[in-house]
Length: 465
Ligand SMILES: [Zn+2]
Image (tube, rainbow, N blue to C red; front, side, top):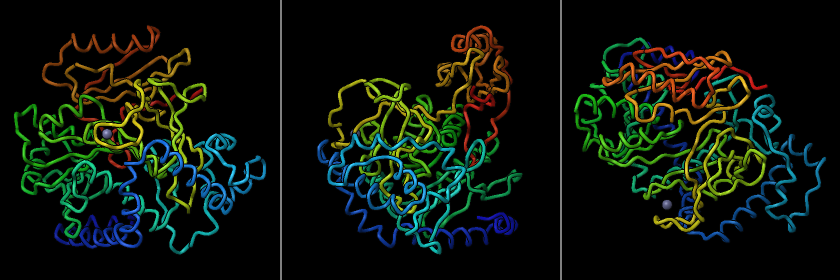
């Protein structure tokens, strides 16, 4: 929505807003599920049964198509390929991909148009802007077909965990549905044709959550689709106030933020429903999702993903790795060996078929954004900060750094929080940073949500050396 339309919408009465949301929902539904969607969905529906060898062949075929047919229509790759020597298409092997240099986000951010295929129909172009947390947002170009393919992958994931993609849904997200300063419910709108209850993630506070629970209990969506921090706020409120959320929904799907262990535990316990986490990106070049057995699978027919360690080599089992990906679905703006800026933990066990029956490779954990780290005075990057708070009575927290030798932790206290908790948290922090850093704890009533209503766990304003 552009800002003018948004302003008009926000000034309409609730009933008109519901109509407008429903109309735009109908358009969205058509865009998602028409066109090539049904046929494409069928074509990928059985791919998870592929064994390792079949997956590799599938990926080689896709990479060949991408490199020799799609990329030459893209100015950036035309220029790049004139400088490197690639084998002829029939000789191409996975190892040849490494001849193409890794693409950094900065290049894409500065010159998105150079990645646009000359084949793309400009009139049918869809531009997606990321809710970049720092710096200039990223522009991603695609078209209706690309989005249909993307939704087909999402539907396949929902299907695989027993959720009907066409079923009723409640989405707690960052869309501006009601005025930011509104203090009384409803903080939601209903999209009639999509059977979707859309709830604002900006208004989740102790004084409002009761009304969220009421509407969810009334609508009983088949599944809830939310940022981990949003649905966790509801679970946490319910747990503190001994409110049962059982029977509200059959499943919860989380995405867009790193799902932390304690969040998943409490959400599942209070809702008595499973949480399935999905990790993707606006650039549409990685798709990881949890299966029925709770394992993260890398959907290898969506993209080719390289997991590289700090030295730039293939990560060993159990090692932290950065995600370098080559997407298969967006021919309008193909990205090859793209450094997406997220880190994962590779499994420490041998890859073997999962209990769920999927042959897609496993990832142990999504660690999150590369920039979800703080920097110490001696130049180290310290990540995975949720461990600092593990087991302590803290409802929400945010780590903020403006100076190399000072970390601020904003904390929303839980009832058992006391001076001992505070001292322990500081000690935990110092174990990671070293004693030369000053840790300041500030108590707040809530953590402000960033762009798109997402919660950022770490904000570091120190530029890397
Ligand atoms: Zn599985």
